[in-house]
Length: 244
Image (cartoon, rainbow, N blue to C red; front, side, top):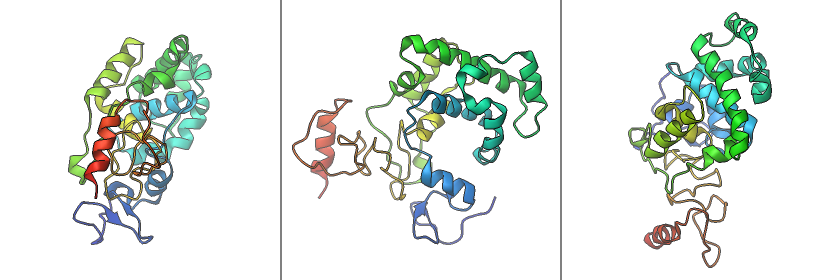
């Protein structure tokens, strides 16, 4: 892996040639940088997208995310763009086809998990759907890491989400994997505080660790505060009072 040069700040972010601050993992590889700048941490609100993210996070277990990201187009092609209704119909012949596809990660247990999870996704439609199910585990507050070492790898919410998904028939959804999912889809914001991406999801503000009441990505309240969905008004007011 290429190490960042001497443009790393004391907090651990790397200042790119474009003047933007990113974490080390997104500072060198152009593919990872583009993914970080445009997709990672942004809300996923559609079933297909959520199922794809869960599937890819499962395939990533034990591997680097860069490996999965480079293979993502091949995964999408091999798994019919991760349309749950299609993958849920995969049979033994489809499994063997996937096992013979050198473009993807040929791990039988993970392939079977993707099929199992597609079927579980369809069943969840009777309970409000996968998207609402996952988003119901959004925490009241998000971390505010100043350094990479301060970024959690799991939480009480990721543990609860893992247990709940397993109860619904999902596999390869351990608490660490689910925390990675939560980061990737904006359920938590673990962008370093100095990163140019911090607070850009519209879910969390840049400096306040409770949800953005206006969905603006701004820490400023434009008028009299209103109650927002997690009921953390006191937290938000406190955060603002503490700022100069």
